[in-house]
Image (cartoon, rainbow, N blue to C red; front, side, top):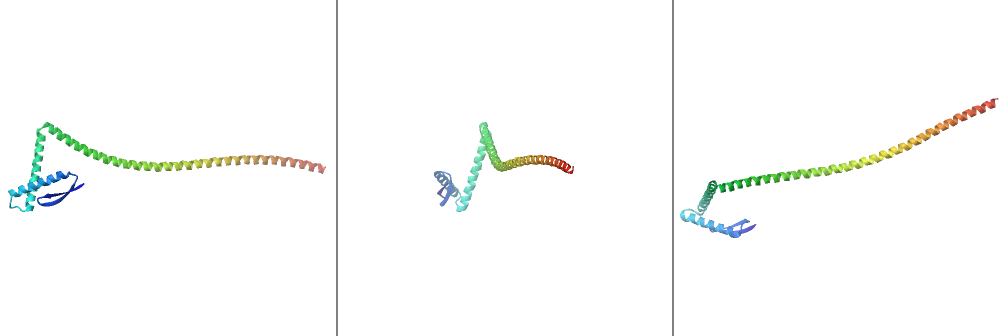
Length: 182
């Protein structure tokens, strides 16, 4: 933005804006002329009164221009269409702004959902890893149980064989005792 120095009715002002410097200087010059016209026709006014009356005249001109524009629009069907299109354009601009706000809100919600999904995915990966470890531990435990069962069966078979041997030895011992008694 440019800072432009202008002189209006003998007073210096700095105008800051995006307007062209030449356009701002032309407006300042035109305002000075209008103030001087007002002061010429009303020579008893002090400077402030002249400025206020000039401002009032400018507002009156603006209102008259607006009324003229409205009557031109009302008289000419093309102007009515143009005016209607401008109103529709403004309504569409407002709708676009609302949609932009909704889009921003939805994007924020989407970002939140993405973060939540990432967190859930992380938890899922962690849970899957824990599950895999538990499955491995279970398989290892099942294998150990199978080995122990085989050992137990082997011990049971050995005990059975040992018992048979004991029974046979007892029979033999009985037979030997019986021969000694004879």
